[in-house]
Image (cartoon, rainbow, N blue to C red; front, side, top):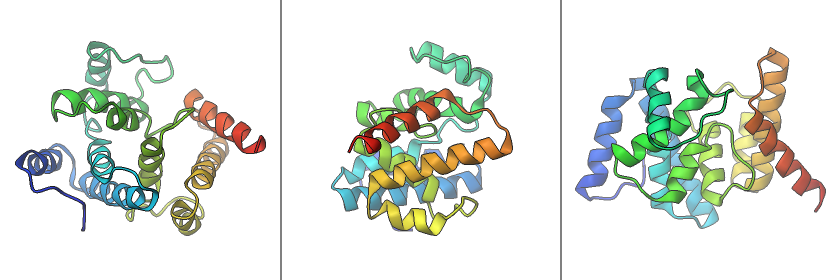
Length: 199
């Protein structure tokens, strides 16, 4: 897989460490996200190295026990909402920020912010935030989402329309399954829907 990897030792060690920390299927997903994020960064003129790093580390806390996720966030000064507490599907993003800093030596705020919001999005997302959020949804190993072929094409045509499509589809899916909707996902959708309506 043609992931954009520098030749420096630290970068190669980062890949090796992530591979050891994740289950095989999750590592393949991670490589897919890193590749897709790099491709999107090239398409939209973002920093390819930052996109690759964010993709590589976005799930670095995925297999940390939820109690440790909470402790990592508390020690790292990252606020946890009542909805996130006890919820590893949401908490791994925030715990991943702490691990990216402490275990992988990443201190770039743009990369850390993208990791932090890659699951739910957030109002006022940066280009890198959008790239990682979308890459996580459309990477080559994904095959369950509705209209995935259209979403993948849209990702390289209009990143903002793609973001809205993913948010809409995610909220519709949660509604049809009866699952609770994370407030941040709803806030993100409302924010971008209002911007779209005001154009």
